[in-house]
Length: 195
Image (tube, rainbow, N blue to C red; front, side, top):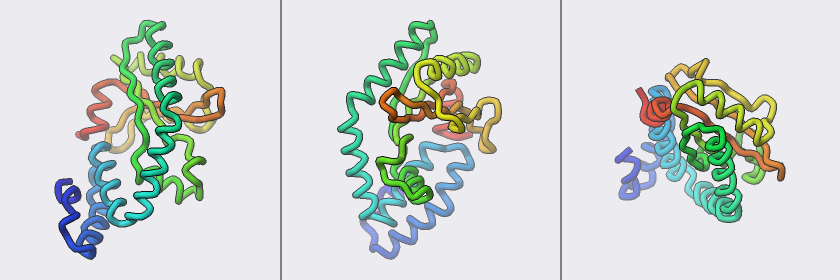
């Protein structure tokens, strides 16, 4: 990670070689070990060095989209917190946008423009235990309409790297979609930092 953060001092050929190696070896290795936070950083840094123009364009476009939707982003967070608090579920809700490389990869794989990537925005709901995760999911689905086929239960069926979380993509009345990830604090620490 430190090498990737300090690539600017190297000549372009070496930067590209190291970025490619990071994208092909170290980011997948971090993913395999369940180190989602590290994987995201490595992929974004590699993307910035391998495709600097596309990285800058996407970064600027995503920042503009965040600024344009700032009130909606906060409103969703408040709605989620309120419905969970009303049902006496002690949770923490975080809002975040996907990593730039993840968005770019999705745009390329599905031939989409940024405006067509609906799950660029995601919320994480951190619950006290497994049972509460499922209760929270039910409340989210009561508040927002779930999109069929966009639900994954990685708590009951963890990924090979031990990752556990419920993922669901939901629609607001406006037609905008966003992703919600629901997990316990222990699952969150494991997902971010690995085994």
